[in-house]
Image (cartoon, rainbow over all chains, first blue to last red; front, side, top):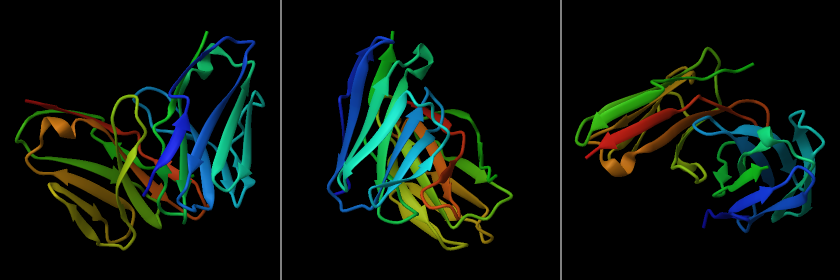
Length: 111
Length: 111
């Protein structure tokens, strides 16, 4: 089973709202990732958690706040977003440094 | 900074035709992944190659990793409309968790 699940599938939020994206994997993978993807472009890495600790932050604005409550769960807390933050947000996990398995994504629209 | 040049960016062909997508770099990668992504969905891992000169086949898809591990190709035989999507190559380097993505190839197969 190589399934990564993400909720919600779609999210519309205003610039003053606070919302959270959720990601879950039950493959026992030790690393989890958040990516942002614009239409027809490759994913851009935002954060990497390894063994539940934040190991990479790609200079992401503080209005994005990641959280890893346990080895299976990854959250992305959103606050005071801008319209240009509208994108597909992808979660991925991996057991080693080679293969990353992606979830279906959350389509975020900021109004 | 590692870069992956993926070509072509767009490919529009008729059902039954063959095609090849290329990923090239001046850097050596420890692994090379190929993903296929449909609109609004997450990338799906097709294959991982790690050994220079490696060739892997997945039904009508053939993947090659260059001898020097700097380039890779994806060849599709007798393309079908179901092959339509965004194809992404991604190279794994020395930094754990960081993949270098190519810019993607948007493939459209017309019935």
